[in-house]
Image (cartoon, rainbow, N blue to C red; front, side, top):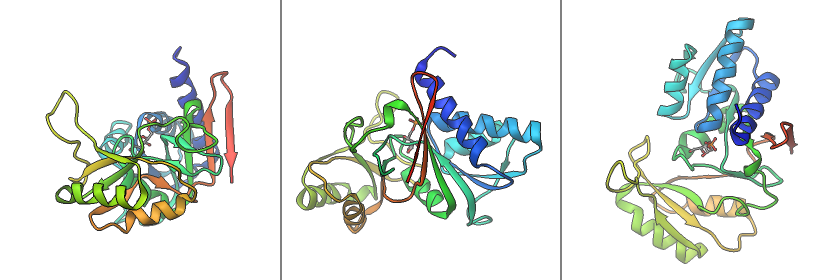
Length: 235
Ligand SMILES: O=C[C@H](O)[C@H](O)[C@H](O)COP(=O)(O)O
């Protein structure tokens, strides 16, 4: 594999799966980095007889689990997870994360919250000192479709910045619809001092289902670097 970003994602995923996965129930995040984690999990199941049941955070994660022949579970059967492994769009020094670039933030946050340990895997482009340095698309906010304008206005009044309704692009006219049948606003923030306060404030707006700020949830992150090493952050 020659693409340095893909190599970095794979190295981070391998290390996280090797260091954190033992027999038990595993939460599977979404996105392109998680693909490598699922591949590694499948390999360990084959080579070592690892006994895992995987709980997906999205349609994509479910497909990955099935394609790799791993055991599929759900939160109703398994509300307590040993570890959840997931990617991120950006992480600051304290492992405050922006997630939801792929629109799966709500289930991802649920899986992160149900796990004894939440481990982040990402490539070097995602590691920042402060949020917003690398990720310029804003904080994803999942909203009930009928409330999107009302939420949009409330966010601007309360927190400033600007929101955009995420659109599907060329393959379908209209907005992105999440796995839950909702819309996504991408809120471009300005001057945030307290991320926890913002996370709570966003979720207090009626019509908001969840937002993509993960504050104080991750304790460990692995970032694949461009030189082939893996940088670890622990908080
Ligand atoms: O909704 C998507 C998720 O939050 C992903 O974990 C995030 O967008 C990172 O994805 P990737 O591993 O493709 O960079």
